[in-house]
Image 1 (cartoon, rainbow, N blue to C red):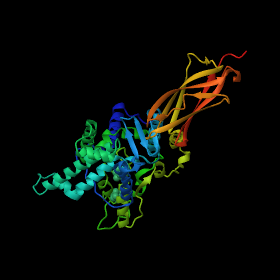
Image 2 (image 1 turned 180 degrees about the vertical axis):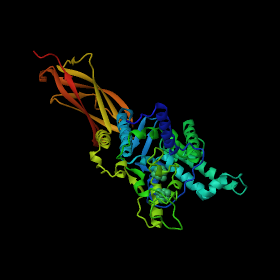
Image 3 (image 1 turned 120 degrees about the vertical axis):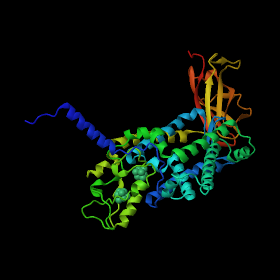
Length: 476
Ligand code: SF4
Ligand code: SF4
């Protein structure tokens, strides 16, 4: 029987293993600025294409619809206009569903492909990519920038550095101004900016956006993704062994070894230790150490490694999008067999149904009717029973509307008080009182169903209906 190791030996072995493991961790704490190399490739093109979606943010406020800005978030007027649709505070449940939909979409995408949103769409990575592109154009390639960083600032470099910071600040300011344009009329707001006639809120937003864009995209860069972004903190619970992320195929790559006299050593794996995958990484991750939290799934290391494989006549895909299960030779289950994406997609479907219902049921007019309770009814001198109602009409469009009113439900009813001109102001509620009279002898019971219908006198397709009751005396 072999002798059991004593506890101090055990703990020393444990710590040796632990330190060995820690030695292999890549934790970027921002001591050094990352100057990632730029290489052409499929994922680089895809990254630019995805980033171009952000053009909508800049040009969106200039789209017009029926003489006004197509999409406006009118905070002061407490209404959102999206083309023909006006969303008022009472429809805010729909905005909540839209937010829920996008939050769950983010979770679903993460469970399928990791931080792919970060790598391709997130404003932090997109703006950082743009800022570093400008930096490269003005201050040279990464190696030159790294060398220059170690030297005192020369008069030769100074003008380019100043120009870089001016361009960065201008991009930040343009981002801030573009943000505020969504909350008013873009053309009017530009005039107001030039005349210094915008609110303190607008100036405040521009200052905040300019400062944070300059700071985050110019200086903090990947540190925001690693240490500030809350999504980075929670994404770990959304991914699993079936999530497809950039992964180094160590079965094929190891043992790695450099080319000798341009020749590949037959005893070595396909990785030639060129470090190109590491050099292009915008977050400073060495993907050969395995899938990591700092990886924003941008695929740039795949482009880099593929170009190396092309040069040494090896098949592409030493680094590629794959899951840990795939890496370990297991079959990748289809998405519809994975519980995590399925749960996310079910929630998204429910939210989408709610949004669709809301959009198709958001009429341009809304009606609510309050029945006068005290008294419930009045007996008129002509023998008819009269009920009193207060109609509240909400016009959800951006134009005045002339309103017609009808009451239906009893063949002998008379509607009194609806023959005057009723104007509903845009995005406002109008209240007025009407009376309904029914001859007492025509009443079949103590209560009769009744409905009120309002419609736009200029376009009766725009209408709304409300079901109410008519009350009379007890019939003996
Ligand atoms: S780019 Fe490819 S070959 Fe070069 S170090 Fe990275 S994994 Fe190895
Ligand atoms: S490891 Fe590859 S995919 Fe991940 S962030 Fe770096 S370059 Fe992008």
